[in-house]
Length: 109
Length: 410
Ligand code: SF4
Ligand code: SF4
Image (cartoon, rainbow over all chains, first blue to last red; front, top):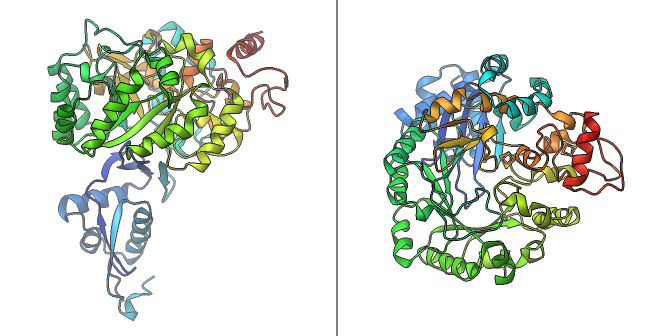
């Protein structure tokens, strides 16, 4: 069985205005302006930060494509997708709904 | 709003920071050394929660730098945190300021918050703002609004995204001008109109005092009229504010009502400055601890770097940009290293410590010359549920707190 990076039903894209900085504990995501209540998140997963930076630098922000190319383990993909969905809810990513996955792709874990 | 995304546990370089701070302690001002020492041992990682876990480990760079780019100001507000008025002799030149912008960009600082003085009195302000735009730094400018001409507003619009905070410390000329000087209300409103006419992103910035508190609804409406948000911030006793703090700072009952008012106005911003009010029992949005020396710091006109804009005092000067790079100061200043390791002081015994983290160190210092005491506006001091000691009659004032500090030394 295979698991595609958009098997959760979304294709994730990093918003261009989001800033990312590596830190010893992982990194910081920032989307801010003093006219809004901005958002700032401490992310304690260096791997996730690396993925976000890689997607920005090499995949024009397309996180799903970055996962497809860089992550082979189904378990790691699933964990990253869960994390990306969390970041989407917090306003750092946009998600494009993709056609539902084929039935055999849904239960990779 | 600060958020946390945790996927697995990770330990900080806690002990490394502590050892470095100890090694560098010789360079600390003696008053600062004594004040930090009094706060006790740094909290262990297991004793920290929320943002504290990430911030106390030290970040590679600030998230926001407040930059008081000049001390020159055409107003003389009675509570000015930096005692501004005249330009100072060693103010950074435009070339030096541009180099600082470049350095902050290289360190990946996210945002610069320009203030002063009045930033539009700094001769190089346009070049500095343009350089920030080129370097993709988010800019926020705090201005008294009086020098905004239609032409300037137009020129600023070309720098978007840029955010403005225009100060109004009351919703009426009487209340505002009592703090900010004659005719300041009318001129600030005119500045707001001109910035709004260009569609610029605005907030009306208002320091909460016992006189402006009854005008919050009207301030909210004024901000709405300009398509702006209202941002209410805490009065601190720094700069000229020391002389008027006792008279102007809100009463505990006003603070209690203010928390309820904030609940009804969730779009009002607070610059995360009222986290000491969390001890009423309701956590306000945003950072729940002092972000000085960890998430932010302040560059002052003559290149001095301090933990925050409200902590401008020689004892806590972390370094000077005439002598060191910003990076060196951020990474190696003993003031910053110790600040990041500060203990809980007398608040260590408080069951609400997780909510308020002892309040604002700058306020403690300027009111009581101590960092180990609780916040002088601790909302529980002297109340029937005072977590540190019961003294129901004691008023929540700096005088009461000074006595408290003396008693504790005995
Ligand atoms: S010292 Fe006080 S004013 Fe400065 S950042 Fe800390 S809490 Fe805020
Ligand atoms: S005693 Fe200290 S920690 Fe407790 S509520 Fe007061 S200032 Fe906050």
